[in-house]
Image (cartoon, helix red, strand yellow):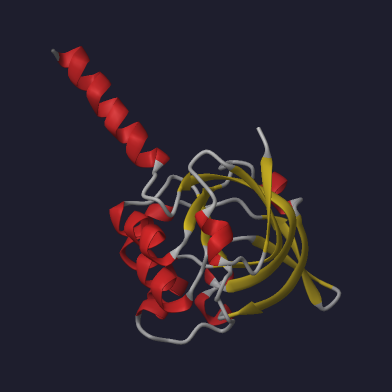
Length: 190
């Protein structure tokens, strides 16, 4: 299977060329954003960075302060479903092109992906140290008042691996698995 290289910022045409099941490797800047970040953006606070064409990573990285900067020790994905109420608005209002997380997202996000040219990328859960190996630099941090795991970390990544599980064409691996599971379960009960 071919791996699609992505470099941030990403244009809409590149995102719309991706399909569920594609494997990607991301290079460039990725910004973390969890519950508190999405809530703050939802309330209308302008983001601390330009998110146009960028990627939000649902991640609360483990950082160590060293020599006046930060080193990332672990950076695994966090469960994305918590961002479902807000994610589509962040896509619409800030022009992000991808979201990285784990566990998938729901119908509002899928509709947002389709309308605004975005994809959901699934990263490997339980492999926080492996993910951190692809982070070559921590280039900044904003909103530390939210706490370290909830802050917006600016992560420079090289060949960060992920799989497209929701695309901009209405495709959702998560939806397909749920439907297939429901069908199989109903056959077992019959």
